[in-house]
Every structure is written in C-alpha cells, then in structure tokens.
Length: 187
Image 1: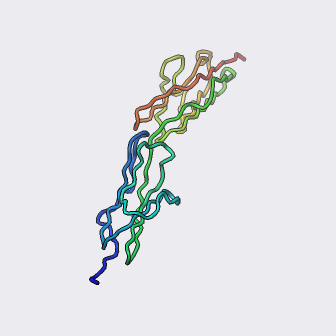
Image 2: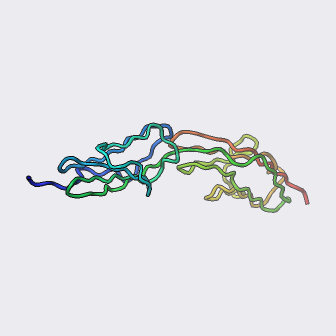
Image 3: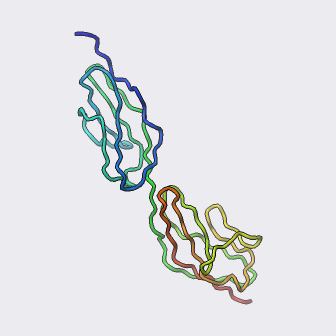
C-alpha cells in the first residue's frame, strides 16, 4: 500500500494583489501530496467549482465584481487542506453621479461645497477648479480630507463654476465632474 502523504502546500499565495479591469487573472493552488489530488475554488464564501484535477482558476477578463478573497481546497484520499486566502483587488473608476448644481452664499459667510461623488478603487486624487483654474489652498480656502471645499468668508470673486477632477493613480483614468455654480449674494 505504501505511505500516503496528505496534501501540503509548497508555496502560499500573496496576501493581496491589485489588478486592472479587463486583465486576465490566473490563480494557482500549488499543492503536493499523494495523487490523485483534487481541487476546489472558493470566492469569499461562494464555491466557484466542484472538486476536480484542475489546480488553476482562470478569470479571462476581470471586473470589479471579481474583487474579494479567493482560496482553494485541496484533497486526496488521506486528507484535505485549505489554502491561505489571497485578496484580489480590482482598480476601477466609475462616473460622477450628480449633474450640475447651484449653491448660493451671502457675502462674508462661509461656503461649504462637498465634492461630487464618484466610485473608485483606490480612492482617487481629487483637485478642485474654479472657472478652469486650479484652486490652491490659502488662509481663506481649505480643502478637507474628504475633499470638501470650504471658503471661510465669501467675497464676490468667489462666485463662479466649481468642479473637481478625480484621478485614479493605478489605472490612470481621470474624470471631471459637472459644475457647481456658486453665487455670492451681497448683503
């Protein structure tokens, strides 16, 4: 009969991997042990395959729904083993969700302009513009960590069309929001 060896892993997958949409992804289950070895693949808690001799799992064209945790189970007649999970992250950028909007503020008062929302992974770099020119932070104008634009004390020249540009550093995509027109009303 000989000594049957239960499955064991020679190498474990990376803990996390970042990919672009539409890329091909091949996951492998590098196990050893007495043959036949059978493999099954799991995404988060969903079983993707039944047990088979296929030690690879192929996604021909990634999209954001493929993000999550993957692992294989390997078994033979003497045992079964769960692979360490690998997190698959998929870089993507959606579109700005809101249309044009207007906002008004009285002269001398503060104006708070939240950044238009966009879905992106990773979080995009966001730059504010007014009438086509980049807005540098100053003693009067602050940009918060969640990219809200805060004008501490509004003056007439603050009126104009504001918009943001969002850049995803991983896939290089950039998008420009619809404008937010700010009017400054004199008291």
